[in-house]
Amino acid sequence: MADDENNQPKKSRGILKILGFALGGLLLVGAGLGAGFFMFGSNQPDPSEEIEQIIERKMVEAEEKKAADEKAAEGESKVAKETPEVETFMTTYFEFPGTFTTNLMNSRKFLQVGLGVSTQYDDKVMGNVEAHQLGLRSEILNTISEFSEADIQGKAGREQLAKALTESINQKLIALEDFGGIQEVHFTSFVLQ
Image (cartoon, rainbow, N blue to C red; front, side):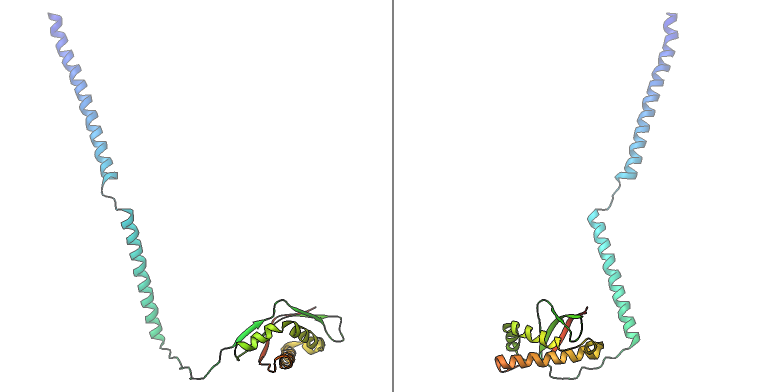
C-alpha cells in the first residue's frame, strides 16, 4: 500500500502535464485560427467593386482634365473668324492606274509619273475619262515626250507639264465626246531616271 500512495502523486502529476499540454495546444490552435481569421478572413472587397471604384476614379480624372482644358481655353480668349458664305463645288478626282513612263526629248533619261485628274463638273466627265483611258494614256505619253529634261526641272517646270497635260487631255476628250471638263492634272509620283 505504501507503493500505491507514492504512485498517486506521480500519476496526478502526469495527468496534469498531459492536460497542460492539451490545453496549451488548444490555446495555440485557437490563437492561430484567430490570427488567420484576422489576417485573411476579414471582409475583403469584392473585385467587381474595386473595378467600379477604379472606373469611377478614371471618369472623375477625365472630367477634371476636361474642365481644366476648357478653363485654359477660356483663359486664352481666342476668337474665331467666321467663314464667309461662298458657293463651292465638289471636286471629283480620278487616278490613272499604274504609272506613265517615257523618254524625254533629246535625253537618255526617262520620266516615270503617276497621274490623277480633277474636275468640278458632274460625274459624266470622269465617266468619259474612264471610258477613254487607252486613248488618253497615249495622249499623255506623247505630251510628256515633248518635254526635255531642262523643261521639267523645279516646281515651275512641273506646273508647265501639268498644264500641257491638262490641255492635251481636254483636246482628246473634246475630239471623242465634244467636251473636255478636266480642270487640273495632279502628279501622284514623279521620278526622273
